[in-house]
Length: 205
Image (tube, rainbow, N blue to C red; front, side, top):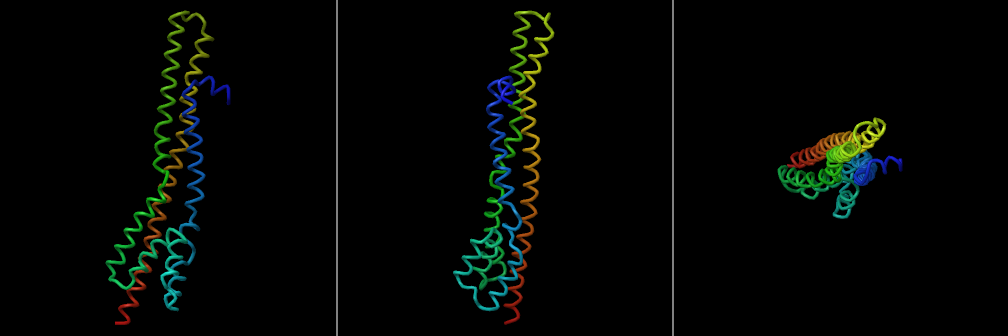
């Protein structure tokens, strides 16, 4: 590995840095975007039970809000439960945009890494080929072994860049899809709570 780093030249350093950063982002997002952390099981049912028992005070709503991203959405609706259906939905939508932005944290960086590492690799190959042509100008093309070795070294950066870009792009698409699914499921849960509370208010009229 060290030999490849030296053979690829100085452009291997930013490619290596991108590799380390992409690995850190993938690990962090895989841990953060666990469904059990984002959407605790049966949270809506527990909130409804608290509501029926008249235990939904400000402290309890704050605990729900701090417990999970889904809890933030539900707490936004609960804080406006005495207002109209439209007000509750608007509050949930406002908080939902903030929650989704947090779930997408670092994904733009991962996508940028997937885009620039092949270009860094290509740049390294171009610079290596320029050096090879300089050698040809000075020594001619009589030594095929020297030329083959120089070309292989020039291609190292492209291989390294693609090795970082391909998994980065795959994980970027995977996490984007996962965030979309989580956002839809959280919205469904929040609207479910709104409909339940709205139905109860209408029944009491």
